[in-house]
Length: 118
Image (cartoon, rainbow, N blue to C red; front, side, top):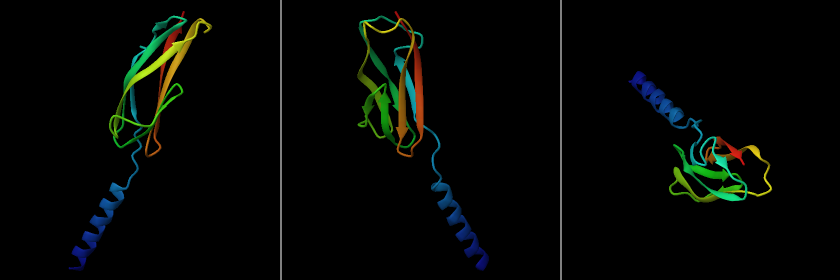
């Protein structure tokens, strides 16, 4: 009987430790617009679209300075109603657009899209 109780205690403690492990997976970011390598013209504004998902719960999305803390659901959000203005005075050449997402456990993911400004 003692060995059964010891085994039960071991099993309960094993399950408790396993269920308390921190999730090390950061959010997954997909940016559909602007596309990688897109040519963006000075003086124009472009829509930013995509999705951010997480296997636990999102905490914040930063789309090049636009902070988002209210989501479509606790684990996903569609990027919409965000615009990327290219000022007329922008420097011609290579540029980037960055989205960073953080989940409630503190895992952070950054996705950068390379663009060309003309």
